Image (cartoon, rainbow, N blue to C red; front, side):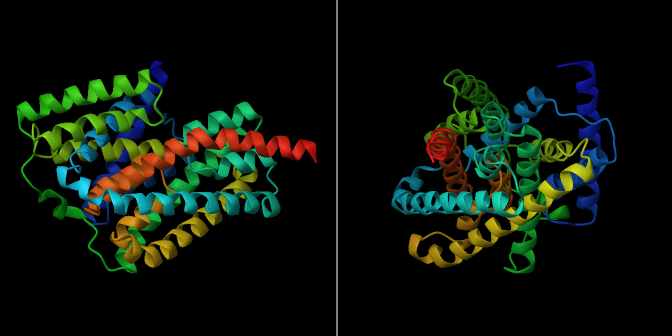
Length: 350
């Protein structure tokens, strides 16, 4: 990592922390992530020399993995049948949303078929951009579409839950009131979970290893009873600031004359996907046996870390949400490239 990138990341984090503090003082929902994301995005669009430092970001992503691990308990094994039904619905939802989004980008946005496909597959921004570029798609457009959809979803879901569903979204000083946090011995165990989970996940090339590996290791410790308390709140706030800033930084260097069209369709696609997720969640939640809010977060077209963080912060069955998004990431990362090759071969033969 160059000195320039490090300084750019420090600037982005400082701007993000300022945004989080402003949102916190104003008692706005999910202040540290949403405030950080908005302020950093505005700064990036305005030309500020902010930057994304992936090694540091990944370090904070492991904190989110540990945080999610605390949501897993032994009695969750009794809910596996409900989770299986949720998984089937999630697979159907992702497939239909991807098909719709590809058609939207191709017919109305006039994207080439490679860029349209990898802009539509919700399998992780970095991974889909890399695979799409290798397949011949426009990497900048793919990355921007995924970033814009995540940005929209992260802002829209708390607003929907607050204004339409009327649930209490944690804000301001209310975030300071929580259960006792992990003691020094538990923090040492969780640090080991972060190191081992991250390293093993990377070794076996697990998609999303930065969050999945530490989460699995921490979940084992919580289920076994070696750790019983969550991470300290300030540490979670820091992770939210870094995550929000990392999203905002991706809007740096936007040339609106060239990117306005893809951004427009990214927001349209995100809005339609989120609307479909809301409808499906309301219809299917009673049948599956989970709350409609948990199912909405599981089906929402946002990133793994972002949706899990919102679920954890709201206290809306984060273990279920995390599991559904992990399965989505694994399936899309595994099947999306193969499906594209089949579709591409079919186009060539016709």
